[in-house]
Length: 107
Image 1 (cartoon, rainbow, N blue to C red):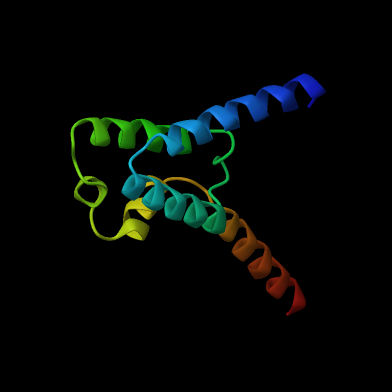
Image 2: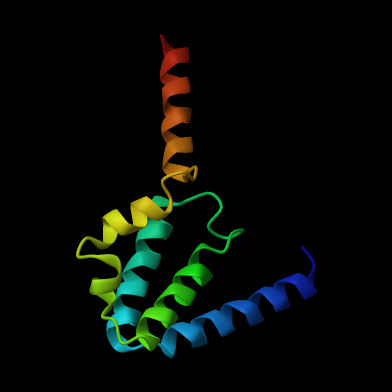
């Protein structure tokens, strides 16, 4: 990864953050909680894919339609997040597999 890639990545991230800040406050709060959840659970393709920008697109459409954020995603934010990444491999799964392999070797 060259310096140009880093600079471009920062520009894209700043543009993404600006879009989030333009959302209504309730949408911002839910987005931030979802982002924390994803960073904790760690879907492997989080940084490579369009998950976060797709959520912002979805939220922008909901906000434009005048729909409340919980009306849009439901009351259980974690369940909504889990559903979004249900087919994605997570770092937690990779870690669990490595532990299982190590415990198998220890026997």
